[in-house]
Image 1 (cartoon, rainbow, N blue to C red):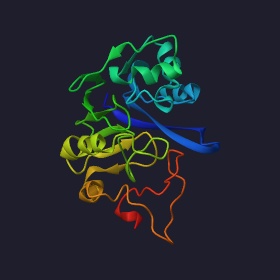
Image 2 (tube, rainbow, N blue to C red):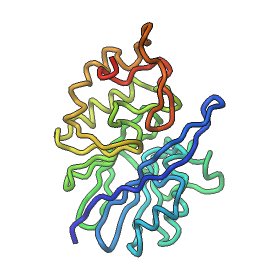
Image 3 (cartoon, rainbow, N blue to C red):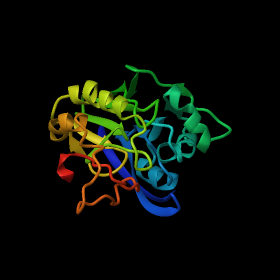
Length: 239
């Protein structure tokens, strides 16, 4: 049976500096009619499992240890006793959500997961978190980027870039080496392609992401992950 990619959108609220923001998360289900892998299960395990149906969950893969990547991981994995995978550098973040358990698998760069008739290749893409990873599926022409790269540019955490140099290195050295037609499937927002975003890379490196808004420009606004821009520009399209 041919593998396919399915998207489940879950909703929640995050509190940033005393202000609540609505957040939407993408959980990705990849597999066929018999078996699946679930990527970044967030918040609503019941909704995610409705999409999975009777198919066997082989693994739950978290591209980061943040709550909106792992908050439904244990519940989604439990029915079929699936393994949960996370990069070891994000284990401290995992424990903020799951204080009494650990993931089953420590992911490493160039690791491999298999489901149905396709392969997922682990790519270390730190920046937003130290153990951030992306998962590339060559057969389906898609890369699951978590927060590393989104439709509006490099992802942020709480309105900031925790380690922008590392993040841009990950994007330029790993994600933008993929074919331009590769679908970018992030944890927040809509999908895009590598070819759509790659032309903006030089502008990001030259400082467009951190340039402070001038008078008359918007300095705040809701993002797909519920954070606020706070004077940080996401790319040349924000001029």
